[in-house]
Image (cartoon, rainbow, N blue to C red; front, side, top):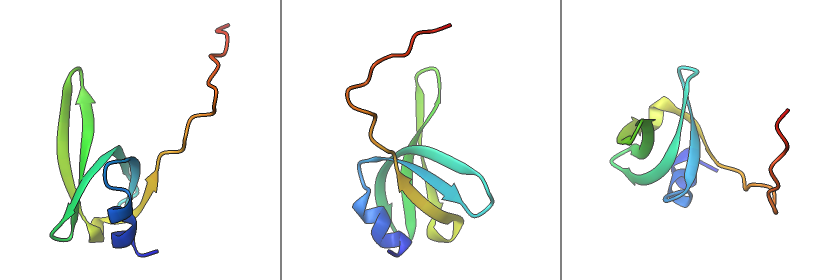
Length: 77
């Protein structure tokens, strides 16, 4: 599936974005506009930022997997 179609299908979902330079970001995919994706990312403390990446910067966009159901915390050792 082309990356643009994948982006539209994932709007509003938590995603991991693999960038062409080998780095990656994660957050919620907010929108797709003008050849860019807009992702709200956590910075630190109580701060979030919406950042944009052009499609030529993006290698892939992956949805976050579901948590195992039901989640049972593992004991700490």
